[in-house]
Length: 174
Picture 1 (spheres, one colour):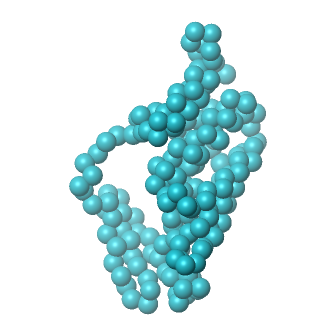
Picture 2 (cartoon, helix red, strand yellow):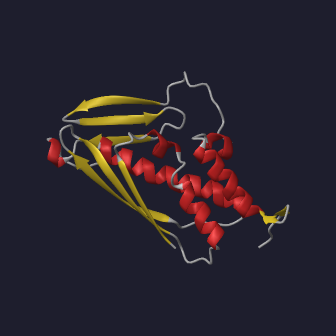
Picture 3 (spheres, rainbow, N blue to C red):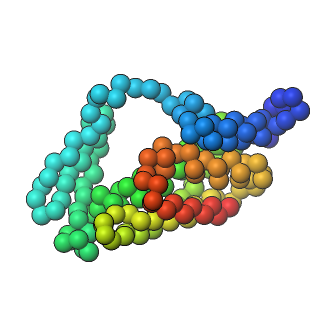
């Protein structure tokens, strides 16, 4: 693997330092170069179908997701619940950000998967903890690459958007 040397430091180390600096400033969008789009455009449409079910349509692609209330909250639990989607979105966002930093760093995480466990709290009913185990395919990741990957779990937009009382427990299995 080719590493660009900047002032005697390998590029991945520089990327990790930039990532850490931007995370500490709570502005990951600068490190990841997120496009700023017109936020006034609707993202999705949600229609209540009755029987505690919704149909959610992503307006740009037309992709449809159905939700069902969970069995512990008067539903049938036959589809993702809205809180299942929130927990799953966290894992999806983390893996997407990992993919971005891996691509920028010149390494690959294709085949990485996550197992998500959502823990509900009461009074009020809410997600109290999201546990995510991230499993990476066999690869000889360097210590720097592992550090960059592990740090990227903390800077995804979903992680930064969740309520501070929601515990996010992430374990990376290399």
